[in-house]
Amino acid sequence: MISLISTNSSIASLEPDPDGFQQRRKRAAKLTNFFGVNYRDLFGDVLESIEKGMNDEFVAGTMQPEEVEVCSPTASLDTV
Image (cartoon, rainbow, N blue to C red; front, side, top):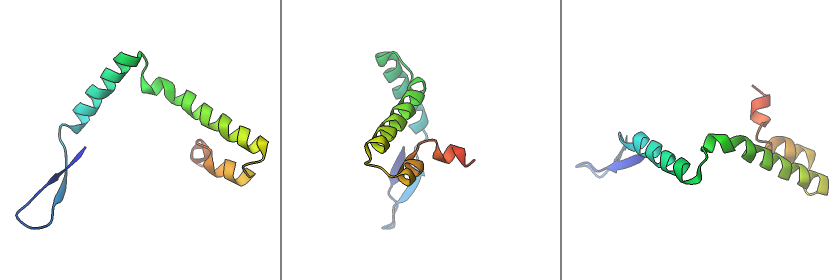
């Protein structure tokens, strides 16, 4: 997280919150414990769902091939 630190001048500087990472990790651990699944375990399923939805729209004729290619979550992975 980034917190705003006010100074004597009228300009505020951005400084990284040193506890931000630890707070995010604690929050992620609580969510993992509550839902019983790690978000990393779901990532592949989410990408698959997005790709299936885009394919369904392409088949239905609501998306052009170029749109599917640009919007594909793995499009940037294919170019690497």
